[in-house]
Image (cartoon, rainbow, N blue to C red; front, side, top):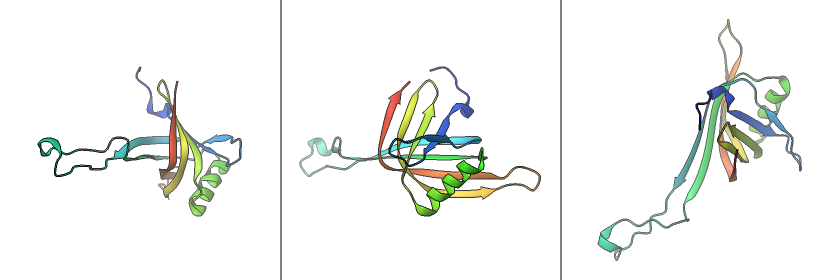
Length: 138
């Protein structure tokens, strides 16, 4: 994978329709995508050599996304705000150039607004997965 500009990572939210259209949440200046798994300990008194044993394919997986920036328009701001206040689990796409697309249901777990008196209004938000996340390689 060649070096990529961080600004090229796209974050898109669906309109919630059966065949969804995705809207880019604009002006993200910083974003982080974290994938994690929690293991389940299956160690027993008869585990070989008293080594810890983990149950394969039994753990919990989670994806979280955090980002900050400026909304590109009133429609994207309104859609995000509506999803936060109603705690809607919407389909989101996270497009990472030369890598692939993560897609699945996320809930907005944090939404903040801010800004300096001599600059644009900004937002920051955190998404947490609310179901299975798929990956499509580019």
